[in-house]
Image (tube, rainbow, N blue to C red; front, side, top):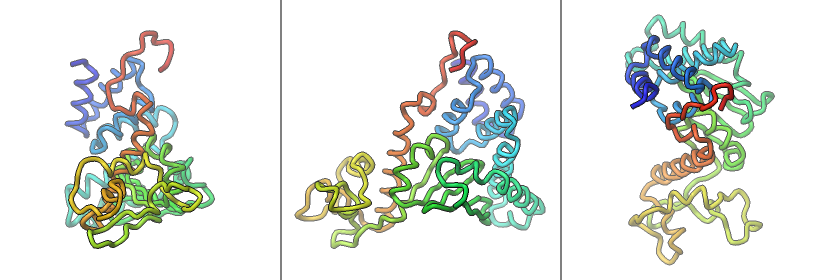
Length: 280
């Protein structure tokens, strides 16, 4: 195991340890891997880790993006408070302080957070009681948790246009296509043909490409529709929630695949640059 691998595991296990984060930063600098895309790759692969998010905040400080860095830190602090006091977090004195800091920072960087996804002129935002920031506009809603976008709700045309940007820069864990609803049938809940890529695309608007929903067709499942092709039959689910969850999962597979050509997106340990005068 390399020093980089050992330090990464240590930061994952002890997210609050600033000394460990500093050691990992030093190792990334020494191997010429102290750059934003490396950190994003780690965060995408370990979305549960606060330590890696705080490490990204340290990088942002070094780039003169203090407000963005502090937004990550205060959201991590709020999430930690919610976890420690799940039934009484809002009554804690630090809760109001953290929420006030978060509101001030969001006003400053709101348009930056959604750059490339929501036009600045369309942006509105609100804080939730859970300490999240919900940014909406242009047919999209993006929920920020611990400094990065975690959930997105948007119509399929917006998702297909912006998925690459969203997944490249954030550890997205939930997608809801707001213009798609499964149809009630005798066998359960079916993602009807309007969700698929029809034989004649001009006959149906707002369809999804096959490479998005193909993840829903893997394996065998009971409850298939009678007298319909296998591809359509396998898009039948026992409950509405199960159907929506399946499409969300397919969207996650689709979005993550868009960034897999980036080696950092795979979440592996970068190889040290052979010529440290040239940044990777």
